[in-house]
Image 1: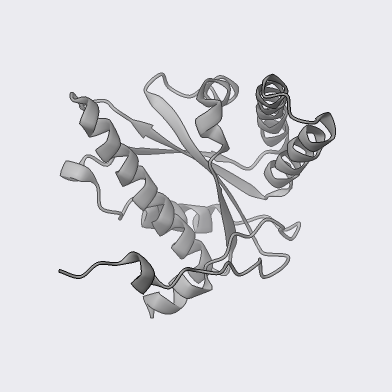
Image 2 (image 1 turned 120 degrees about the vertical axis):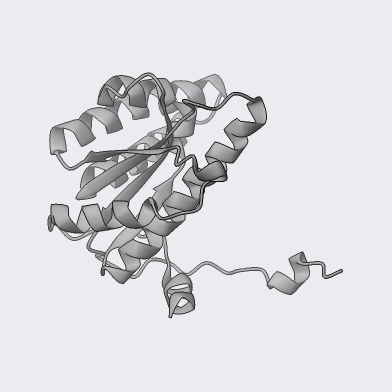
Length: 191
């Protein structure tokens, strides 16, 4: 039942050193593209990274930007170092990294950008749920929103692809941490 899958979803950050078959990655992407999208625009785009050198380069360049941004905020250097190292480990240790992007080709109005972003987010949720059903773990990282130019440069993305998220995927090394959820009744109004 889909609700069982939804309740089983966790952000998995540690993976076994085991490759994910391309056929399985394709199944996840197929599920992602079954998400609803505004005006059936299907603005999602995906860059799949499985090679270590590309993951290393992406982690390095994103880490440089993170470090520079945090130094501008006058954060403590030891905290910055830990944050950069943690991010680097998450990206490079994952067997698969999928960068989800949006394309605004065919969109005219500023409000349509928001609709496109919502559509891409829906595709990401489909991908995360499909990963669980396939026996995989995944984690949604919003980091590309802070450095879309870096991601575009490293991955040689087309000009119209805007990086929205980075999804790490692999066979889970642990069960992840369950997160407490606020009772939906506290956040819901019936009229």
